[in-house]
Image (tube, rainbow, N blue to C red; front, side):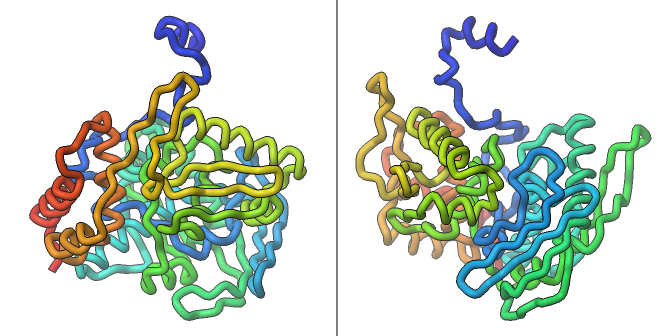
Length: 361
């Protein structure tokens, strides 16, 4: 069926974006959407391979050691928590950081609307989506971690789970959850209170492959705003927690690199590789537009002057300006990447409207 549609549209298989379709109901980021703050991930689990890349139940006990830190992850009968299960934590972290930015009281226990979480993380909102969320909660609570990684200035050496508990507060008559209450672990909550978090690009939730998501997390943590960051394939595999052979892992990474060369789909960074290394280059710092094989160019993300960020902070006091930049870029891309008379003025206007709609005092 998919092949027939592709032929009718005159598209080659390679022309289709590797990204999942954007399932969000409202892509107009000038209107208050489900995230009051941009998606956030805690730095500790972005740096270390806490989550499984497997799409099948992963019941391995894994231990990772690097630079004096260690983390040992043990599965429950449901298997290890997966990279896609991490969406639940990202949503909870984002809501708490948004409340902190608004000077609102926060709690280790988060109550949320299941539909909002599914929509914000680009998941299906049918029965499969709700069942997938239920399974994710079971794995997040069941996966046990022992580590000496410090979050919020505290070193924890006891065994703990990523969430202490999850409670379905309300269900519809057909059994679908409406409200969910999640108590985060001390480890995760300490990281939030210390604001040891990083803003994620919204297209993170559209990445199909668990390995792509894990590679993006590492690039976001280690490359950040730098021009580029390189890592050996051997260390990348270790940091990803991949159980593949070295040869298979290299093939999987090369596939992602080729797709990014063709589609430019990897968020924030372009990905290239040699025989032994993988390089992530910050798209905002790339001067030339990447070229498709047929000669067409991708629209380059608007470039802003350094002083623009200072002006944006002045009109949107209290906001994470780099987070607002990601939101603005996502809106610009969703709008078809229109030509801007002044990218700097457009971004400042975006920030001003966001602050007028929801001022942070």
